[in-house]
Image (cartoon, one colour):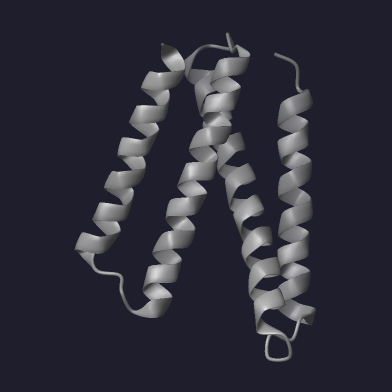
Length: 124
């Protein structure tokens, strides 16, 4: 597989990380909270998802010894998105004071079951 999709993920990671940093320093959330929350959440989601998609793809490329087909790349993107949703959910639970060992473990367990279901559906 060519380096094009990996390069696109790298560009998404850089731009979303830069926009999240700029939003953090220059946006006043007290003047318009819904816009600030939505913009920061979207930038953080894209940044985390693209970073972990690249990390999972690099790990799989090493694991499969360079023999990668598009399905593996798409699975890496799916796993990165799912991992970022779990991470944002854990941070949200923590900020609301709802995070305990059971709720965090349940969130991770549900994400694992969703990934197993999606993997079995895509392989058949």
